[in-house]
Image (cartoon, rainbow, N blue to C red; front, side, top):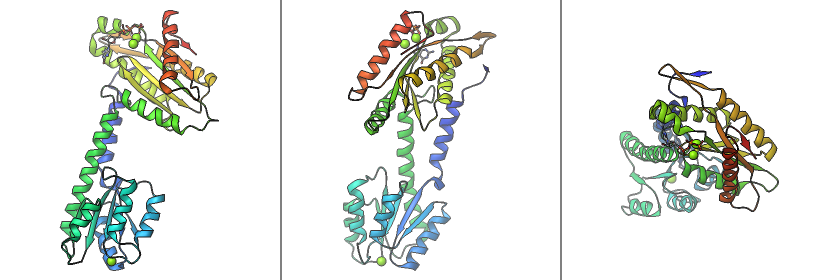
Length: 316
Ligand code: GH3
Ligand code: MG
Ligand code: MG
Ligand code: MG
């Protein structure tokens, strides 16, 4: 299998960023006890292509927020019988920050202090009724734009720019979370992979060819690791890591052995030369009760052994 063109991973990054930027990816919850006011808001927001949900009270809004994970913005009325919009805002902010959820208050009250109260309780914006639809649209757009920027920055902060894989920081953050969440009767494994004699590729064919080899190896890892189950990252240089969920030592070894073979079979054309690389891999089943760093160190020591015993092999 000959890789001639650029990698797939960078395209995936661009597609993901584009998806983050589209309105239909955002869900807005409209909370208002008055039916006509509520449907007016829903109509405007639906026209902007958002996914819109409705709640008839603050209590119902909190129930929906419990079960619906992905709500990005709440538009709430102030005067409602069981719980007012101010109290709803306060309650939402106990668990969700403005970085993950925006809140916009709306009211036909003539109390000029209401806007400040809402903002102090954690709302991001407030609109007095009556308003022209464009004002609501602009304010919603501004809030969604802020969320898009946060999501885009967060996504890019987690990425390795060259390969499109997760970066070192993201790997440690995510794997620690996954290890913390792991039930004691479930196993997991961790592997470190290092390209053999990679310096020689750079020295012989140039740094750009080296970069393409890194992308090719990254693509192979991304294709092999089912995203819902396994997790892969570039730790730095020509070193990669794999976190394998529900995978014991035996399964992890054969998984890594398959990756080793796949990479060995890759051929990349550079200036009429055909380049191939091999990798060495150290892999361990994570030990419950042991820190993740220690588990990773154990994999690193096995990698070192794989290198000193001839490279192009998996040690477990
Ligand atoms: P070993 O088999 O023992 O791992 O030998 P090696 O040559 O692969 O390892 P070494 O650590 O000596 O060299 C790694 C090289 O990787 C050195 C460095 O210039 C190169 N490198 C690190 N990051 C990048 C990168 O982003 N692009 C390219 N092209 N080269 C990189
Ligand atoms: Mg009302
Ligand atoms: Mg190396
Ligand atoms: Mg190395």
